[in-house]
Image: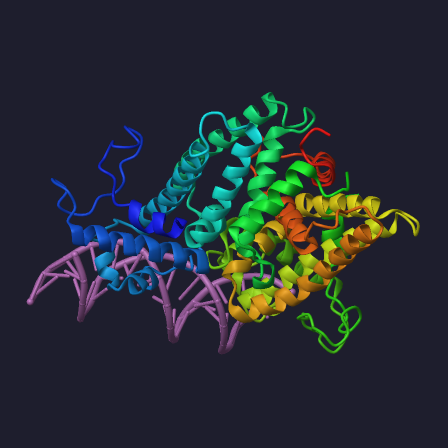
Length: 231
Length: 231
DNA sequence: GTCTATATAGAGATAGAC
DNA sequence: GTCTATCTCTATATAGAC
């Protein structure tokens, strides 16, 4: 199972209200009265995948809609059949990336069953997040790199989307502390941001440093839990 | 002592060969035959400081030379008196940022004296790097955010500049391991990139998470050396 | 749904006055 | 050293044919 497979298959345009009731209506392609056609759904996914890659490679402003269209196998003008503007496209690409990462991590933790310990759950979350970061690297990299360059309004909405995911991690950490698996003098908020910072930074690592998600997660969990000093 | 002070005062145009013999000639303002004038040197610094801020806020491509010029109190056309192109300006801004950070960290470690232990030296380096990241935040943020968006040639040169700084850290870590202060089964290369990833990510943290360099460095050192699990 | 063609605006760079 | 004016290219977005 790879995140890439997850990312490429599951993010068809959601039926409004299905999953994020009342919160956000994802832009829909034509046939607005009914369901999107099979063909348009596939093209839409190709556009989003291409957008993630190009935005991550070139940054927000340097990305030309023509680059995305070409990568998706269509012409620039045709993009406007799916998205009303560059901003609408980038917002949807970001939303999909966070949504799929959160789904993947939650399902990995859930798979451990009810009576798994706090540390095991954290370790599973670290691995799943590492998988998402590395295997859906275009979405992750786009997210990490361009968030500071977005128009104000787009960024605000995106921060809301990320909030839910952050809250989930906060709970994982609180639970682990409650069961005595994290020292009392560690600031959990700082810890969470350090973990994300470390894991997400892997997208910028040179090739000679890159590790598989398993190796990376194992090193990260070991260092964060046990420390690097001999015991 | 703040890095800001360091950054703003010490990066006058280097006399070619003075510090980086044969490696790179920083672009020089006019009066090329002799020394730059006092006035031009000051304007040049204002331009670089403004460039760091604007590039970090808007990204590489979205940054208009007009924004930088305005922030520096001059008109767009005048920029070309100092830098031949946008790329030359961004390259110099990046070079100065890395150079000053490295200076600051080396001097903090040196101040410990010859017989300081490996862990103390690392802890001083972590604090100094945190200071540089936080207090020269415009240069750091510009560096971290736009490196993935640079034209190929600019990025290549910049990676060379960073290499020296990375080698210095590699030695700090090797020494600490040699004196038994770091476990044998920790991959030092991964550790170094995780440390940088964690420290540098602080520029993207929301305001409620931000910490002073001292608090940040203390948490980071404690977590990385001792781990978060109770002993 | 996808295309071609084009209106419109923005930004890097240059020229030359002061 | 700094300015104003302008050349030129590129990119978003629209219009309308197929």
